Length: 115
Image (cartoon, rainbow, N blue to C red):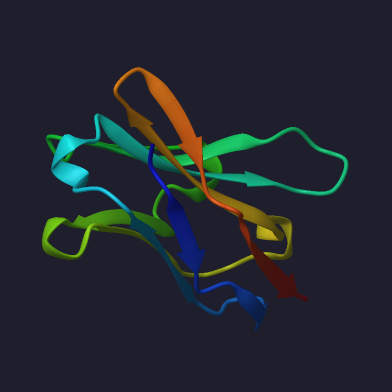
């Protein structure tokens, strides 16, 4: 069982920045990969960024060059640094972890970007 707790969401103007944090209840050394997903009203949940245990990263095209996913193993934390935010980035952002063949989700954190 893995518990994930996100924080860092909020309201920001277009062009601004936010950093999301996701703290895991287990050592992230033991987690295959972790990712950030988002879900906007009326839309399907989509993968935003992924980081593997080896540190490889992957991003959806719409955030490349603006968002950065990273991990701090000592703090069991994965971050999503979001720069140059756009109104279309508005969504609930969820942390996800693949651990021992199962997927776990955090409760989500709201990000709202005003124009």
